[in-house]
Amino acid sequence: MFKNLEKISCDNSIFIVAFKGWSDAAEGATNAIDTLITQYEAEKFASFEEEELFAFARERPIIKNSKEGREIHWPNNDLFYIQNAINDSTSLVVLNGTEPHFKWKTFSSELINLLLSMNVKAVVTLGALLDSIPHTRGVKTQVTGQHLYMPSEFKKKKIEPSKYEGPTGITSVIIEDLKKIDIPSMSIWAHAPHYLQSSPNPLVAQALLEELSKWLPLNFDTKKLKRKSEKYISALDSAISQDSELKSYIEKLETKYDSAVVDFPPVDDDLLLKDLEKFLETNKGNDSSSGE
Image 1 (cartoon, rainbow, N blue to C red):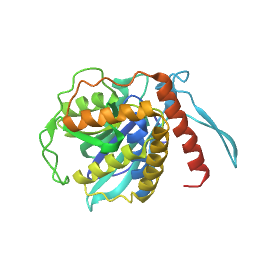
Image 2 (cartoon, rainbow, N blue to C red):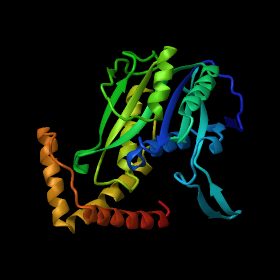
Image 3 (cartoon, one colour):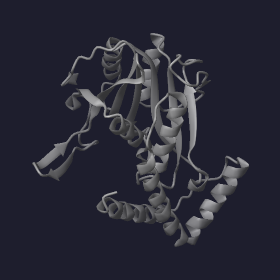
């Protein structure tokens, strides 16, 4: 199931993973993983064969122009290695992926066999979900796990058990398979405002990295993310100021959030949300053209 697999000898490792798709609201989790990979100059050493995992009519490849000509970018599940990222004897294995459509059990089994060959001792999954929260109150993060304590390499140890019941994603399959062989895992979730669904939200990625650094001795230069966050908030505030209905809705969300009331219904005006998303998409295009 792997392609371009390079065997790496590793005495100790911790695995960090995020998937595009169901568990990646506002692309927060995968953007956080991208930052980790870039800042630590991670080395790609393996990829899953995409032909076996995806229905391309559902997760379409993207065609792009480059100096070398037109290129097709397929849905990916790539593995990266960061030697001695935690300490002199503990490295990181990182998966930056897209949730598969097929063969979840096989995917998990193949992945875990590879991790065992690299002496993995703990796993951290990153995810983001949409929630009825206002963007003006920061990004809420939640940490849960299948074991009560994480290994000594972690700055914090004790974690709360997950009480979630309902539809789940590929990370839960991987976590349950790891639990069977007594490898501890924890999940960090960020809660993204539900009215900001389509635009990448750098605030969510920043919150996940900040929470991750509370658990593992990792250092991130978040200046670029902070600049993007500031521009994102500026564009958002501009859009909201032009729409009294949306402004009123967010003020009600703030009241709900501050008083911890949980029964406030989400906005149901699809046109209003589409206008907001269109505004942010336009701003994102302007931002990318500035070279930021």
